[in-house]
Length: 249
Image 1 (cartoon, rainbow, N blue to C red):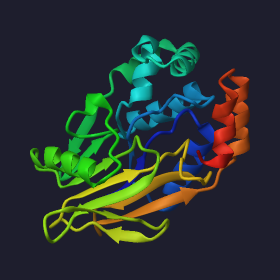
Image 2: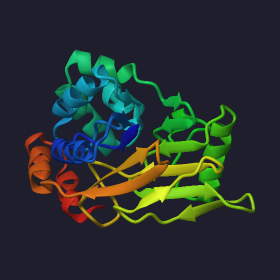
Image 3: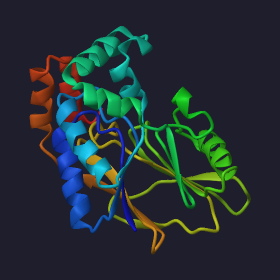
């Protein structure tokens, strides 16, 4: 199985289309969306049409914190986020809201655990950004027999693993270079954000995991971020949401 791992699409239609095209060209046979299909971007309905269609074909889809906020805007306490969530809610059809509401927070498949944020308490939306956070998620996943954890939420591509001395170690992946994730160790990868990278580069992010060779490749895909920014403005969302796409912030 060649598993395309996509997270934090954030209603960015152009970035999603570019990543899906790239994944198909690389032979992806299964798709997993790790949460936050909506939020920030200007095309939530169009993005959900694509994700829902892929779900009907067998794609795995998880719920993220922005998905939660979009179906119940009162859940967010931040005024700006509340306004954005309310705008997204208004752009969605009832069937799309129902789809988001029914999504799971976590999914386990064989030796893999898929989640939007942290495994320990996925509903708390913890950011897994360092070795301590990765260790907590890996420990929680191991209780169910999973050795490979794949998530998003942090909008950056990172990899952590248990080293020879039993400590969780960070590894800096290079885009386009396959990394072997052998079964005798436990691994946690955050696959980055399709629709809103935050590492100073505008290219969309996703990852491809080959369960046959046990190799993961972190990928960057150029897309028309100017069109995505224009969609944000046309939807009446904050101008800073549009500006940040070109800056990768």
